[in-house]
Length: 401
Ligand SMILES: Cc1cc2nc3c(=O)[nH]c(=O)nc-3n(C[C@H](O)[C@H](O)[C@H](O)COP(=O)(O)OP(=O)(O)OC[C@H]3O[C@@H](n4cnc5c(N)ncnc54)[C@H](O)[C@@H]3O)c2cc1C
Image (cartoon, protein in one colour):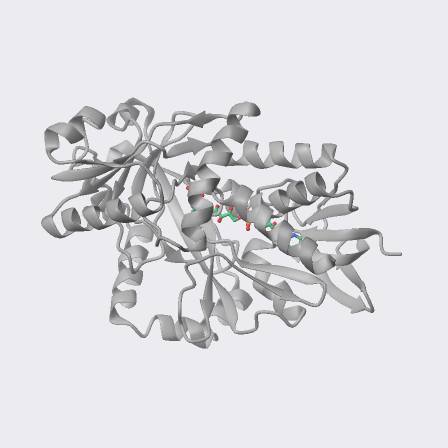
């Protein structure tokens, strides 16, 4: 008999949410295996902490569905469990006519997705929300909120533990072998056996999937997102969240301002190629992982477009030159100065690419024999974690039957 019915690799918001939903619905024996000694040490604890209500995602996409539902569910979870949350709303500002037109398109998408928005038509209306923001017009979405993502993951994991799930932290999965109906999960601390395996290993999910013969047409390319924060005496320049008008072709939002639940105002993230999957500083290199990225055909196909090369160089400039970062931030709040910014933390996005160079923009998972692999828990993966985890748990139960 295997030790567990289901072993979940990865103690981020996705792994914990799947464990929570499986344990709520069934009496299966479940464990979560996490390589770090604490949960939420990577993407789930190094993000902007924003609940994105789904106003700018294509209607009908999984991303739109999970983000709109996820925002509502997470707000109610945070209220019930006293997780810090600020329901401040977001302002998406347009600085020229082309962006103003884009705001109308975004508002149409928002309406289709069932998200309430309002267009503020002039500077006076913008100033009522954000006295220091730039822009000729803005889209205001009151449903956006910020949360403490690490506290959320720990609370969810606590609830899951209360339902009987075992957590193994400090156990790095090195290899998974299968004999008959049993997976032998070889970790840095010994072997755990399970009949079903969920791979929610975030930045390393593709590696585990490939080792198990799944998702071989995809590879994760790590993109670092760096933040600055406003010095305390300048925090009142920003009341809530101020975003630029997003470029629909890019998978990230562009540098923006977020007031966090601890009252800090963070600016970022940019999106720069990380020289290692956990290379959080721009001076850190993991030579083997960098060689894997540079040896990947999908990477070169993505960067065969001149637009992507331009974007990459601009982002690199923002990483190494504070002035470039501040200039981008000034386009949203013109009165900020370089001395108002101090360096903050960084996170790394597990961006999945297809061999043909396509950036996968929707959540993606694939099944193998008695296993499911979360290949793309793309942003807003934190916001989406409750419905996405439930969706995965239903898919797993169907397959186990
Ligand atoms: C800079 C940045 C900003 C973001 N901002 C937002 C935002 O504002 N709102 C939002 O909704 N989303 C945001 N996101 C996206 C969101 O953070 C992610 O989509 C989400 O956290 C993904 O969760 P996960 O559980 O899949 O991955 P992770 O949190 O990365 O968890 C994976 C876990 O697997 C573990 N692991 C890996 N390999 C192994 C192994 N071999 N053995 C055992 N364990 C292993 C890792 O240690 C890790 O804890 C942001 C992401 C980044 C990077």
